[in-house]
Amino acid sequence: MIGGRRPLIVGEVLFDVMPDGSRVLGGAPFNVAWHLEAFGLRPLVVTRVGTDDSGDEVLTAMEAWGMDTSGVQRDDVFSTGRVQVDLTGGEPTFDILANQAYDHLDRREATQSIAGKTFSLLYHGSLISREADSSSALDDLEERSAAPIFVDVNLRDPWWNRVDVVASVSRARWVKVNEAELELLAGESDIRIAEAFRKDHDLDAVIVTRGGHGAFVVDGGGTFESAPPNEVQVVDTVGAGDAFSAVFILGLTHGWATDLTLERALEFAAAVCTLPGATSVDRRLYSGFEDRGWW
Image (cartoon, rainbow, N blue to C red):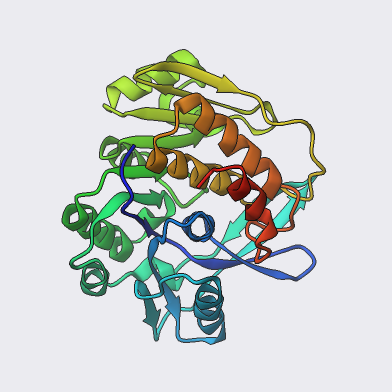
């Protein structure tokens, strides 16, 4: 258990533009924060959007969902983030544009937004390291918050390099990767390699997602594996990993056993796969889990 304080979520917010032209508010850190808000954890999101209509939409959506917008910066030069999503067999690929507002976090504004606050953990992904502005702001936030770090590895070519990712991993307590990412970082992808990776980087846990085959976790208590729940009607898998991460953070917050956390994270990820896009404004997505005592 890491206590009842708020999580600090740092990184991109953007609009996923779907193949049919529809736009879905997203970005891995934002998706995680959206779910955590519904779980009652009141995350603080530090991100940056443009002074454009899309930036206004982000703030409007956050306010309507009840989220704290005090960490959202506005940018007069760079536009609110956008990603083109293509789906093949329900599996997404992403065309991530360069030089978006979220790449240019202001360090001073970022540190001011956390002044006087304490946090249960700091969550970020890999994309925040691709530009110096946001990378420097993250360094300051990590130092000033002194919160344990959860790194959600999202390796999107060409927007990552091994040195930056390994440095982020080495500062973390928990790291989530998929099988392909573990292979890129550690040379292979299996339980033995994950445990060696955990020990090499002095991590509390390595969490490895395996798509339709479920996930496994290696931590100080051993190895835990779980398959996804019974087959669901998949609309798309956009945001499934972010849903998984959000429930894992919920489990850390409430002190769930690792095997229970893993089972619940896979269940919620499967539920998100039945929806178009990564998030929903329909509270019914969450109410059944709340009724079962998740939070």
